[in-house]
Image 1 (cartoon, rainbow over the protein chains, first blue to last red):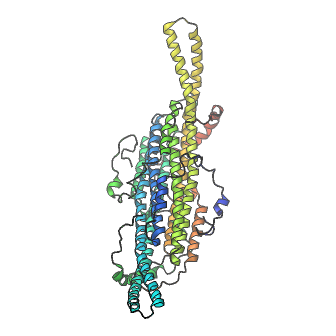
Image 2: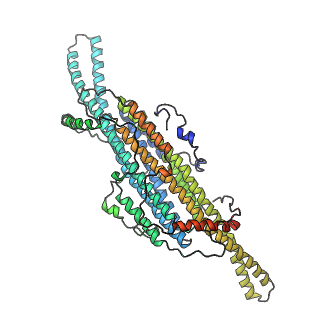
Image 3: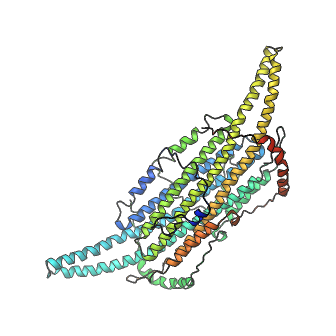
Length: 309
Length: 309
């Protein structure tokens, strides 16, 4: 991890990298014939937010980049399912135990591909929620610009025609623009926080679910491997008949049940935090009290038409 | 999961799909401009094993398909790191809490990309181990063909020149070829099982490690979100000063420590198996006894030059 604990600074080797040297770099990482990554992805990223308001540009770009991530995970999911089928196809020619175990391994790996597909759908909720921050950013921009424009006009008039009656009209307009702007900035502040929290909760919950389910599948996969008769035979010796069909079927049924019954409450991987926030409970109460106050002015419909980048 | 618990049969909806309807399909899944998946990947898959021996064709193809999977995961990893940087970049313009939290979220998400890269290196061990099965398959093929060829020659001669002295020579040759073939088939049987088990143990261990680490990161990410001041403000109201710098830094340090100290023994996601194999311990003992016997004839160097597909 970044030693400075910020992405805005340069990077140093981490403790764990120093402690345990990583395995050799994968042999697939070099020799790419068709360039790094897809043309469509580069295009999508670099054009994002070009046409939109300045304020929402960076987030518009992030939203597009997340689309790239999703498309790439989709590719992994599809290719994973293909390998699962190929594994099963290969194993079919083998002895009974090899044939049965590879077919069942294929079922598990196919399921990983399916879960990856489901993960994408959940990840999309994160991305869509980010969009609502981008939308409020885009809608606040004109109100900021309007205030600035009126301020400039007043300054200009005061210099050129100090007694112009227009100045009073503009000053009244500025008061209104400032009021509007105050509301807009408060909305921006509130919605950004609310949606940022919601979106990353979606992302982290979906990662949690996905990764715990994958860890489960890996566990069942290892149980399947136990059914392979890997005691070596001597030339001419025949292996005892395979009797693992029931067991392998049961492993898959167990895996299916474990996946079907998994919920976030069942999550078994828990972070260990060294700081616990003492005033967490108080905050929850405050939140409810303030809710009515906020509802009055915030509930205007802020949904903009989707900004086409 | 496949209701028939086999990839070789057709598919029916699963219990969990019937029970809980999935979320709406992600909005990224349609409207692909540049075709489905990469040209390089399709090319690699469809040409795999074309030139190699028939017996190793399917596995050669699987090995190539796994390369596609790895390349795609690499793409995800790279794009993930880019989103992490963009998130931090976007947040920098925000208020102190938004700025700090997004930067730290960026650190965690960047770390996911790094872990994906490490995962690929470990996944490669699985793929490389599959290659040794492909190699023994490729080396057994000629011995099978030779045996078949001699058998055919003898049959042909017995029909055309029943008294030819060549028949005896060929029959002696056949005995030798059969002996060779017996050894080759036993090697194939033993190595296939040994390497199949080893390769999928690599794959499942790497999935376990990767997914548990991701689940950890998601947990720490959720802790970071708690630092966001999401109690709504009214227009004109200013938020209390942000005091979460120490806390957010500590979350990252905790995450780093948790990731650094994770080992397979710490794995917290455990499969629940309804069948326990009673004779597992006996098998372990047998294995050791037979080991010496096997060592004599199996230890020839079976590593072939890598078959270029």
